[in-house]
Image (cartoon, rainbow, N blue to C red; front, side, top):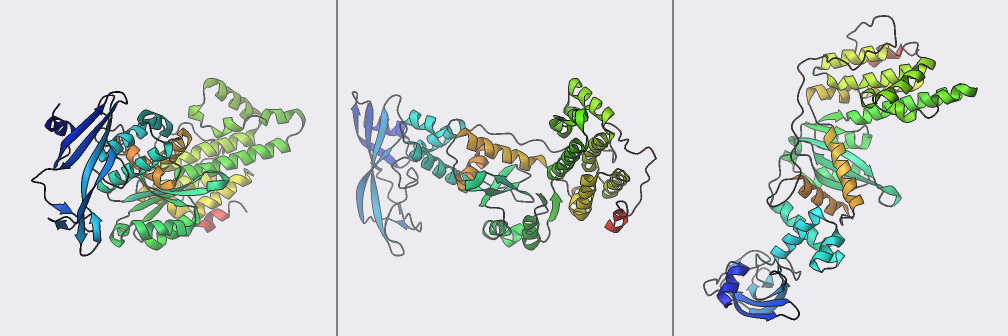
Length: 450
């Protein structure tokens, strides 16, 4: 083959192959590359200024994509320019994005391979060290993140993930509309979220945030109220139901110690049955719960209260949600369920954050799905051992790109037409009929538990 044919196959704009060397024994291909005669403009890699005269030149050896079974090495002539602002600097070459001895095409191939395989597998495939593959993947993700178009942040989600005693907590900030993580921070303090608002968003971007889905962790809400004045705080439904699960578990434990003798065996071993939703149980598990409810009415009342609480987030209007919460609290009269009474007080304290769901609809499942993807990446051993790399990797995994397999954007949550949907089963903790009242103060409900 002639040198011009190697130039066409290499495909580097503005450069030509003037010498080649093939070693059939070692299965290697070496190409010597220099600028074409018409390519005279030199760009400073520091400031981007253009020059026509070079200070000096040298040869640099980089690895390129393999040609069939031949490992390809490109020896390119690079020039240095004398910039009045930056001094003597190397020219900017699009095919060489950094100082690493690899071309841009080679790093893109390694980065794409890291999306579907572990670091060790990619290292064996390309004949590299695992640490080198991690560094290439990080540079690849940074280039992709810098060039892609980012959607405006209108609905944000804030949550924390526990990674053990060494890493402790990591704060995850995500975009609820696009379903991708935006930022990671060490620990879960107010200063952690303050750093995100201060370094990642401008003042106009902070004003455009309409809603934030968070748990009831006070440092997060304080930071959002300080930096995003127009943002409505919506408490996550799953964290509220988690408190309800803890309440029914406390009732089960109290009934176990209150019962004596053979009656303890009725409550023993039923924890996960009581924590599971009724619609997710098969007929055999439902029969076991019905036998438990027939022998212990207090556990049955606690389970019905826990299941009926989830209906609170099916209402579209604020008044309907408030009336249902009033009727749910009224059912606690004379029940002597102290954990659920404490849960009711907590709901009243955080009432504004719960009612904000009717004012601004958010997707609760996005935050938990992102947390699950983060844990999957860490368990898969794909080299994401620091928060920055993990955030870039998840964004690349979540967002569509050319020649890349990624998740599709989930459909929007359909809105129901009825303000009061049909429940899965009717709650019968009280035999007397319930009346809805329009009281919204905590003092009104504090009389129930006295």
